[in-house]
Length: 128
Image (cartoon, rainbow, N blue to C red):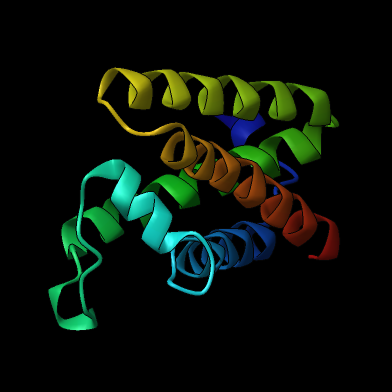
């Protein structure tokens, strides 16, 4: 268990997860890709009082785990492993979104978000 705890910047992990969540809020907002993503995903953009809080909670937990993984790989000097894992996950999500019938635009928005989250989390580790 020591290899996933030792040398990790926990402030960087928390800041990275929160920043990744906020980046997602902007990424999927009406200001950026939200309307095209919703159309291509077959969902309706909801108002703030109809937010899917269970999905948002799971999203934050996933971002926290991903940010922890960023912290572990940063402490181990394994940046390329981290990049490879994130690209693999984005490609697998793109594939799954293809099976579920999302448009190419929606698939690209989802995959692009994981790359954005990775960059934000790496920056958080570098700063903190």
